[in-house]
Image: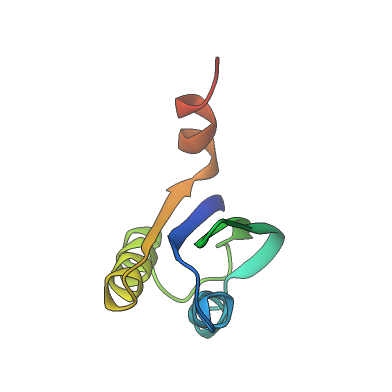
Length: 89
């Protein structure tokens, strides 16, 4: 299954590394990634493939949210189909 992971927070060293390491630790493949700095805020959107993940999607989403809280970031994971439905005009 494909999913969208979004990361937003104050820019600092190691944000990409922490998120990518967590995904890799659970065998989640990054298909596409876009990141930018808006003034002092880091923003990143990732398209990932969770088909090989060693944890259920809900658990992965919870792990990402917890990692975000620990780093004072907002990290969210949504199934691609739900993300697309929410952002359809």
